[in-house]
Image (cartoon, rainbow, N blue to C red):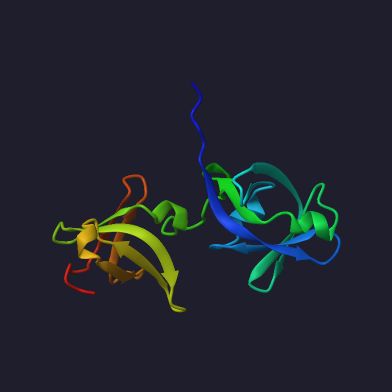
Length: 174
């Protein structure tokens, strides 16, 4: 029995760019995985999937523009409305072992120095200075979310193998 690989949605399409089949791409995080992979997986709004072979990829402001094999007109490009996904193993290795892909951090349990489990990372936001872990309490009735800056002062260890992040953050801090 073969193991089912999970596609990870890492960008969305933003419509045609020009008349020659280029497509606007809006990455959800850093664009490096998109530059590393030559085959992307397109997931249409109706859930249909197809592989796209990337022939060219360029930065365009905060977005990217991509050219795909077989997509040669504005009309072809406009039909590509949906998500771009990759398999996790298609992401490039990070040079610094203290860096992590957001997709590897989301879902990690967050435990403070006192051993209290604060919750689970549900998102990573950016305040312009540093990344912020958005940690949702595992007690849904509390409705509590912690916004923990990803800096040495607060984040002590990220173990993506064990899916645990250890922090210096008290449970009554908001």
